[in-house]
Length: 408
Ligand code: ZN
Ligand code: ZN
Image 1 (tube, protein in one colour):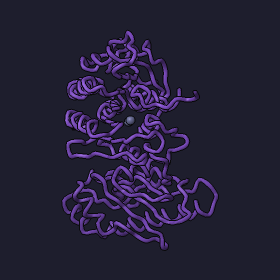
Image 2: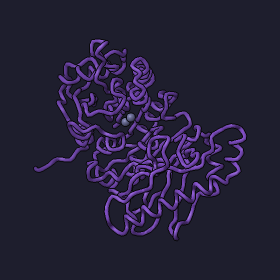
Image 3: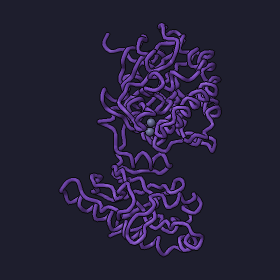
């Protein structure tokens, strides 16, 4: 089985273009070819009216109820960055930022290079605050993850990242009045002060100032979550899973479910990602005894956030061209395929919305319906009807002939 996620590809359409959506507008003959042989429908990845994050949506699509299993953005980001989390670890997403006279002037420290950021943080990788270990793991450019490791910590605290400039970093505030929560917030505030002091004195920052670049002199934290292990996809559904994605958050969700992660420099998670390479890799993994391959293509979501209709259309057309070998392989070797989005990111909204996403399921012996074009509106008349995200994995297992019968 292979699930191809065109991240945020679903849309609402643009009034000025006769309500055409990028999926409707784009030419995607290869996708339409398999669409003609498969069955279509709409899917609420979480629930009607709920705008999904990529993390909760991927959990649901992989068969896990996000309301029971989601542990916050930080832990998935950390797992996706290759960090080995232990149960109870509190993880945050972190930004290197620039502070001047106590106020944030750049939340990305001038998009400091990966090399410089790594060098800057190397002496502060683990820091002890009141006997509690803080670990910072750099990812790319100004981004990092921070993990706190101790007994009795609590993730119900506010971000120190105010998400805007011209103000000082926020103090972490406990959301609940327990001792654990108050202690965690206090530790985080001490860590923020410690890092500001340590980074201010770093030779790398002195160097940057000389070159007229903003110093990376603060670490802003957001998305706190406590890592809570869940039963693996092997334990729950009896399948071996693999994930191909350039996005740390998506990789983290897959890793939390015990899926194998495949990374490569050509898989970037950006507009420059090599879709053809990913498709080729998916074929290899299908032939290497993986029961389920999740292939995430992020760029459609980025064009959605940019509000770039033309760019989104071109991205869809490029995906259609470059995944053609994968679609052909699925048909030639009798695999099961789902093609969908994790949520809509309409170019008119530039954010995720709760609109249902189009879904195409192909299997060698599946029903066919009358849908011949893959778009938000045309799939609504398909044979699958309306599903929820958590239904999808069972639909695929059933199509693959390895689903479980309920009753006798
Ligand atoms: Zn997404
Ligand atoms: Zn998005």
